[in-house]
Length: 243
Image (tube, rainbow, N blue to C red; front, side, top):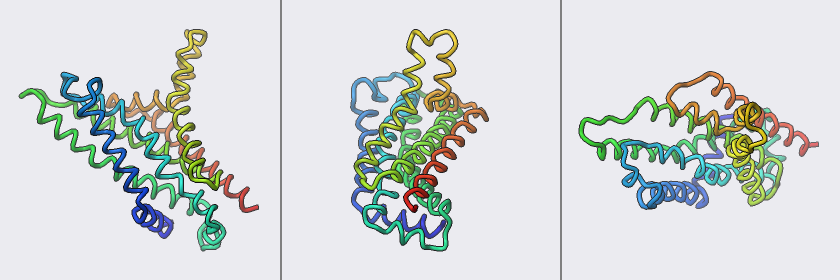
């Protein structure tokens, strides 16, 4: 698994696409959180990172498909997928090597956002402290969400030999799983019972739950289940390609 991990990280940073993807993500964060009138920190009036944690999942929906789109699609297009599977590694080791490489790159993109914590704490009124529990919980929730999106992106890359198609399918899948069930639960005909269960299927419900600062094992199990499901689907998709 380690050789695949190192190979993927090196391939990402040897391509301009990697730098552009991370740069666009950080630039969009800065633009929305410091300049845009309806979402910037300065107009919010409170020493809080709520705006960032509301915006970050939407931006991750763009960043993560861009990071994962080449994982297997590029191997299929270039014909190196057969060479890769001749290595003394199991299918699962190859998939996990690519998965953890993509997740590490996403975590690398999130690291600079920690500067927002420092900035907002300095802008806060003297004697007013940030809610550190909620911030830590939100970052944990954001990491689990990114891990789930990455598993989806890896799967979408395994079912197509075209990077653009992989990007678009992953973008739609992440959007539907994050916001689709939440939107479905708000339909009036589902109110009074089914709305709660529909909401629980979506990622937004569990991300919001962790972001409150209380780590519920049910939310952790949900994200681990999503990751496991899409890793398993990736393995099945690659096995069918090999037949």
